[in-house]
Amino acid sequence: MNGTPELRAAIAGKLRVRHGLECTDAQITVGGGAKQVVFLALMATLDEGDEVIVPAPYWVSYPDMVCANDGTPVIVDCPETDGFKLTPERLGAALTARTRWVVLNTPGNPTGSAYTVGEVSKSGSPTVRSRMVSPWLLSVRTRCAAAVLGEGLIRRTRAAVVLGRPGRLVIVSALPAFEVQSAGDLEGGQDLDMADVDVPGRVDGELDGVRDVLGLEGLVAVVEVPLGLLHVAEQPECAAGRRNICAGTRYLGSAARTPHVQGGFAQRVTVPAAQIRPLPPELALRRAVLAEPLSVAPHAVHRAGDVTGKRVLVTGAGPIGCLVTAVLRHKGAAEVVVSDLLDTPLRIAAAAGATATLRVGDPDDGAWTDPFDIAVEASGAPAGLRACVERVRRGGTVVLLGLLPPGEVPLLGNIAVTRELELRGAFRFDAEFDEAIGLLARGLPVDAVVTHTFPLTEARAAFDLAHDRAVASKVLLDLTGT
Image 1 (cartoon, rainbow, N blue to C red):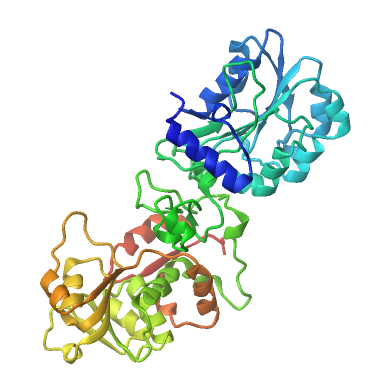
Image 2: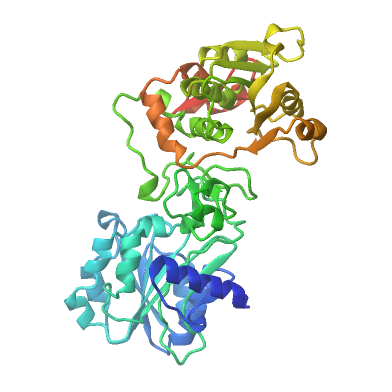
């Protein structure tokens, strides 16, 4: 199977829009895995005795695939002193008249080393090119792709700067368990035109090593310029500026999809440069760690509309509820009443700016007396949603922020209809990440949300405590070693 015609057409469209590449249907192949496409490319092009340069350390199957197709693997040692990378000098020494392929595995497996644009361009020097008769460059972008290579490298390889041989580049861009490659016409008879394919697919399997290696597996291949998320620009929601609800979006560290998207809990994590944010010098790390969860709060408040002078109910005083409380007050809400089942979360909510707190199940509390203009459901509990719908004024707004249990959830639909309530969902965030950093740097009162800090050696105790809402809110692991 080579993918459906619709899928190949969609890939061609993405290449045209994103990279300015015009590719025919014959130049796009969809395979069941990176190794399958690599094997087919070698099968279509190698004759007996043709040489394939394989930099070492290498993925174990490369030499075997070459031998299986009557080729001769030429192993070039790339020591740690060179960053495990193939230098122009070593490449030039290995080239012969029989060289048919040069394998450029970046990021390298198993080393994780990645080539820069400058390093690859040097490999295309006149001296190197003069010794290459008719080679192809095989760039196997497994488990990490555009973010490491960079758009500049993709464009330069498209212009054939690397080896000076137009139509001789194959980029295999792999996504675990659903992989999209471009290797031109593997039936033979045509040169293999290069194309850079990194469209999204159903991603599952092959996640075992992610925590130990890069933290992102192949998901980086669908990244453009997100803030803590992975998305696809061609989706209509992304084009409309709502990347957080785009059907192709993947958030780092998200459990919303199966398998879960791995996050930053790794020795090294590779992300697009556009995702990196320098911290203001006045922002301490202990506060900066709240940037990601805090980003959810301004997004939810934006969904509520203008809160200036409004009376607002927040159900649920977990970390998100307390952060929402702080942002509501910062945005000018006159009153913010927070409800919860436990005393500790309510104390944290008060420190974050709540004008009143109340225990769930106490209908006589004076804070319930007047209706609310806006209610934000942050508990993820059906009872919290019921309280929001019941307590908001006629014509008021309810923002559903907490994720409710799976399946059907009771909803007071008649009240929503007869009072013309506006129910608005709020899902994660997008550009609010920068706003969150600014709020933290300017002293938004959220320090109380971080209740405990543990050294990495006590990680198990930290996770155990984080489950106890009666004691803890946000629990940190100190990775600085201090």
